[in-house]
Length: 151
Length: 151
DNA sequence: AATTAATTTGTAATCATTACATAAAAGAAA
DNA sequence: TTTCTTTTATGTAATGATTACAAATTAATT
Ligand SMILES: [Mn+2]
Ligand SMILES: [Mn+2]
Ligand SMILES: [Zn+2]
Ligand SMILES: [Zn+2]
Image 1: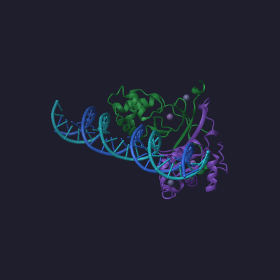
Image 2 (image 1 turned 60 degrees about the horizontal axis):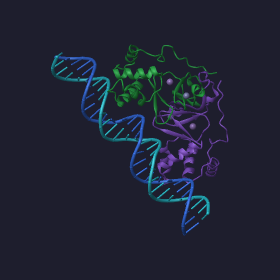
Image 3 (image 1 turned 180 degrees about the vertical axis):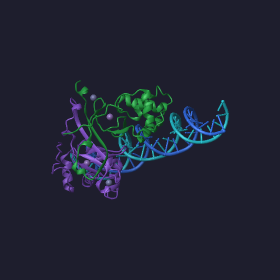
Image 4 (image 1 turned 60 degrees about the vertical axis):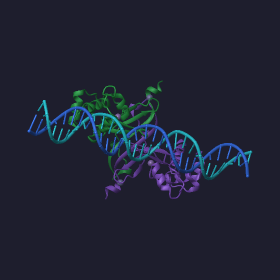
């Protein structure tokens, strides 16, 4: 029987207001500049697991001086401070996620949407890996989502 | 309790001789040219989950006219005929595996070796994915392997 | 051998990411 | 405020893995 990791109610799953984001960045040692706030807001509140390019295109109309380098720099900074994780599902595309607790991803090959699901490999003991130290866990599935199936 | 997928004894886990590889390629609709045989041999018999570049460098001394394009073309052909799968663990590096049945991967951050372990997500029912059609399953872990831990 | 098809190769193009130098903004000292 | 210093953001160029494409080689067929 698998014990699903509970996603704590106070974590960054939930949508955050600008003041909450400012506080969250500060708490994690990141000075909350405008681009950083907007990038984190997009990442956390839309939960679309975007690529750097998608983040850039989503924000450029609002932050008209934003550069793609800033998006990459910011994501590297967020990664260093462990407030985002990278998601690799397709070759040549790095996606980002502000939900850092262990969970699985499902990518629909029809609509390309990436869904979260509760799942934590850490709860499973794999006998072949005895003596190994496990640091990072990743699980992803490709298929067709419910919504696309119903069409 | 997790039911591990059994890796069948007759499958491509085991090291194959050149005649066996020829037969295996033919059976799967691939004409067994010399580069194709050597590439498959390297992939299957070393089981190191190599990148295209690693395959090229491993074989160039033997197949002195080999081009990197041929490695890529061959991997695409193998993928199309489902005798290899792609493994994504690090950004910007596609690894290949001739073991196509579901299993997990462990990458050691010290020695960079990629280990296989028996694990099949298909055996696990995830309630959040009811109504979804699941096609491909991937599981990987990063950490420190037993051998590096013992040093 | 001549013709045709399949395979392999080398070179150039692509494109996401990174490197790097400069510019702008923010913060501290005076 | 002004000056000095540090941090943040930007633009351009470089990188490097993968792909596109056309030519060359090899294999198969007539
Ligand atoms: Mn997620
Ligand atoms: Mn494997
Ligand atoms: Zn869908
Ligand atoms: Zn190791």
